[in-house]
Image (cartoon, rainbow, N blue to C red; front, side, top):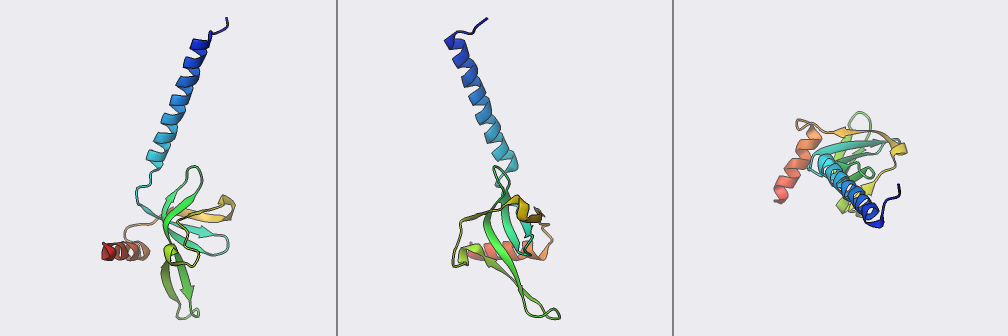
Length: 122
């Protein structure tokens, strides 16, 4: 039995609507909720910010964690990416370069430093 054009069009439209609902739900559930995460790269760079993973891993409102000085007295600081000379809005990462990524605890020093900085700006 061959479907007529109206039935075929209805099926195609139904599939498109379901795909749109699925994508919207994925964005919502994955969420750009403002939770802070850390991304550690194979080259040793450490980035902190809001991370989304769909359609690819992206850092929003990010900071780079920089350490300087010698091993006995290391100095570390968070540098907002917006202050970098290349000032990206977002960073997209290649998964092959990521060693690990995950959420920061609210009790972590980095989390508190970023939240304190955000509160001072408001």
